[in-house]
Length: 577
Image (tube, rainbow, N blue to C red):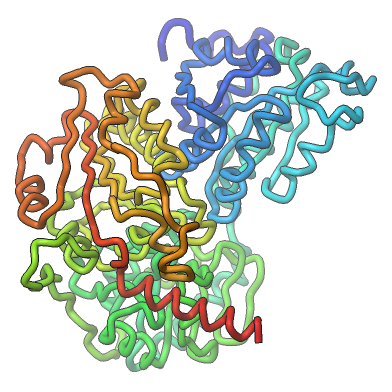
């Protein structure tokens, strides 16, 4: 830390509540704080620098929430600061998405003075009815813990509790920080003891029993498979999952939300399973198995291609963050991490059939120069590198990426469950910032690659200016396909409501203030132009922000999206009938 940072040697003297809060965030790995200033949080923001934290400063609170989401997915925890009422409500969509998808964000809201709240004064940013709890009550359903800091005597305990819950449950928390207690003094000595962020140990007897039951069925199976889903990532079970995949050698597949959790260069990796959205070989292998080891399942509509998963519970063992289910027997309070570790350690040799070996996907051999969805997504896999961070937007990108084979150590960020269009651009800012910090801390090299559609981009385009301001270097592929293609697939192929105004998208980069020599833009309309760009060493090195406007046909979509949309249409038809 810099000389002005809070040091352990100075912790024996009192510090402000805000210093304590920010010091705890710093200890938990947060280096930058997203958000917007507002009169109820301004004094608190003065303490960021002293705590060794950097202020990002976003264009609006919704974008800031998306950015905090992307940052947390890369660094493990993030922080968002907004102001009371108008600011926090602008961010609630992003917070709800983070809650839905298990993303740990510490949301700090600067609120009016405690005396004003007690007296019910008619202040700005209120509903004018004297109710100062209405907004915090709105956040309770989308926060795993809430603290309204009004008493200096309990503030440190409350802060430690909500930050721990944020990390352990991997969901957002809410901290109300009244502007008149920002500088109230509390003891700083407890900062010498970091917050315990370790998961509670499973009851040993229960854990050992579950391990024995799992191994019993695993050794009895003749053609089991492993299916990895999103909660394996969100609840930090990647290491145990990887070890299980490698040691067992079992055919391994991922659901869309689990893509990026498994090393796709392993010989037993088989691809993405999403029911009818899968290719035929993957679907047949998973659905014909006599045992599915399901890790972190999230069986939402988009994640299962319209609920077309075909898995019998009688042939499934489910691993979750707070319970294990073996066939129809459920074991509550037993976390998957410890069970998976012991299963790996005690597994021994399995008597199973050989699994499928992955084949390199080849680009479409269509006799055309048009960049189709069928061509692009496998081609993208040939271009990606180890350590890339890939973000896909709700729409064609979220479904197309299923057909992209990843090199090792590629991380995917997508919002398959919540599906708020515009998410990926804001999230890319947070992810790119987190990647930059990791590169500086560990000497690594990450590229941040955003794949978004023109319609979605229009919702959060301003966040490109934050990327420029913070000297981030993402590669942005904007799919110019003339509107909301995902909506067209679901309903209204020719409907005007699925159209958008065409922008000069790449011209926004200099319009947002990028200086000559600090960025580069490209227009790509043919496969030849795309291939030439992907072969360009300077482009691949990502030396600055790069913006690629890539044209695709208006009515073209990945096959998985077509199948999912068709399933949704059938469900809607049944409801209407």
